[in-house]
Structures are given as C-alpha cells and as structure tokens.
Length: 383
Image (cartoon, rainbow, N blue to C red; front, side, top):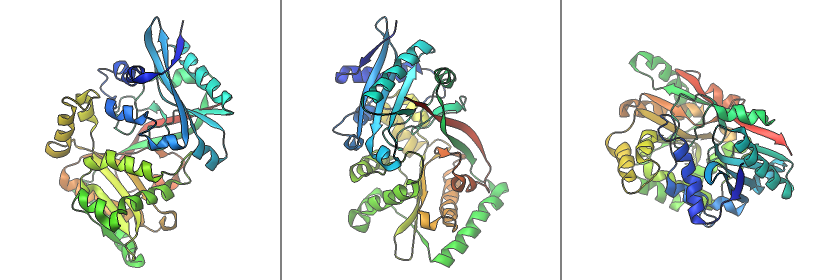
C-alpha cells in the first residue's frame, strides 16, 4: 500500500531532495542537484517565486520507505498571463511502479481541484528557470545542471494514467566548428558584419564580474534579464522574472561565468538588445560532488571552472528582443561565441531546452553541425 505525506520540516525536506540522488545513484547520465541549492529553492523566504506561487511538497511511502516525490505548484502570475487555471507538478521522481505514480498524481490533482484549478500540467517548476519537461528521448545522454534526467519508464507510466502531450522541447548537441568546418562559422560572421553595419550595432565585452555588476550604475544585470524577459514573453507558460528573482539567478550563476562566454549585442544607444550566456559544463563536476557543496563538492566545481574545464559548453540562455528578431542579430551572438569556444578548446555545445514549434529558435542552428539528441515533454490532463 502506498501512502502520501505532505513534507513538513527540514528533515523531511532533506529526505525529499535526497530521494532523487538515491534513485539515480550510479547512473552515468543523471546530474544531481546540490542539496544546498534545493534547500533554498523550496525555502519560502529565500525563493522569490513564492511571491506569486503557492506550492506543497509530497512524499510517497511504502512500508516506511520513500518510493516517490512530487511538488504541487500554482503559478498565479502565469495563470493570469495566459488565462489558465493550471496546477503544475514538478520535481517528480518515482520507482518503476504505476501504483506509486498514481498516488502521487492523484494527490496533485486533488490539491489543484481544492484551489479551483481545472487542468494539471507538467513536469514544470515554479518558472522557466527551473527544470521543465519529462525526458522522452535521449536517455543515454548526459544531463545538464539546468535540466533533469529521468528513466525511460517515466513517460510510459504517466501515459498509462491518461496524460497527453501539451508541448515538447528539444535539445541539440552542437559541434564547435573545426578548421575543416570553418566555412560554416564564416556564414554567421558575414551576416553579423552586415547586420552590425546596417543597424549600427556593436558587441559589449566585460573583463570581470565586478565590471558587469557595476555597469550602467549597477543596473546592467537587470537590463540583461529584461532582454530575456521580453524575448521569452510569448513562450509556453512563461512568467516574467521580478527583481528578486533576477538577483537570485545572478547570484547563482555569475560565480561560474567566464566573462568571455557572455555575449551582449548593444544598439547605437548602448542598450542591450540580445544576449547569449554560456558556461563550461559542470555536469561531471556535479556528479563527482554527489550533490553536496561541502565538504569537497566545492573543489570539483572550482576545478571544472578554473583548472580543467570539461570539453562541453552549456548554452544557458539566448535571447533577442522581439523587434530585433529576423535582422541577423543572433548571428552577432554566434560570431562572438564561436571563436571564443574554439580558443578555449570546447568540442561541442549543449543547447538549453527549446520549444519544438519555435521556428525562429530552430532555424538559427542551420549553418552548424548539430543534432537533436534529447526531447522533453510537458504532459496535460483535464481535472
């Protein structure tokens, strides 16, 4: 018999977080979350998303053993923006047992009905900055620090419960052009030159984290994320980040950012209109850290950032303001990042999740050697 218990207190929260690590221990493709980061994610005082989200965490037990977990979420900002009454399920993990999954999903569905929701969707987090989508292809591919991994039985079991496709995301493995393929990179450079001359655009470069934080009287980070907010505004379920969230993400990712991998396009008034944020992959370092920053996890991260970077580049965020799309501006980003990636010795890049029907996003890879190697799905079910 499966019983469901709402998570109460720090001890149960730690058990909720660590269940994922225990379920995937030894799996070569799963990348564990940091315990410390997850504690902050579910801390109502520290996570700014709780200003417009409500959520409860649940654990599934069988014979006093944890066999599953899930978070029930209502993002009121997203529901208001899109005119929906959706309850989300996120951070879902479970053993290969449909009884366990059914108990978890029944709990989220009832939780949503009690709050006036009429549809359940997921896996989704509080916002788009959290992991989203259930892996349906690419089970033999290494995950990233900003996505989640799941076993092949996940989508099989959830579809048995009557859940259907809402949207799909794809991820690409993009090879960094070698000398033999330099002609492909040159196409982006030519378009970039034409676009910059026609529209009087230029690249903004930074030499240090301090310079980024102090630029535009301390408002440049806000300006960068404003570009992301406006670029992603029309994407599925997106809710704009507020100031607290922006600071939260900046504090999380800026320490790992090599400023050479920050590409910003500015207009003639020195205002950012496009941004590309990349970091060297931390997946292997996170695996070696076993999901803990202390006592030795920090060393594996420091080694990956400063001593021996992985050959993989994670493309965290790429955004172009709507009014500047289809004008060759994204070519400026690629023309900036490709030579840097070559010089730094990266072999290939991992894109962030992209909606499969986002044509503008899909065509930008046309001149590069790449392949879709992962697919994720957001499921839906009427309540």
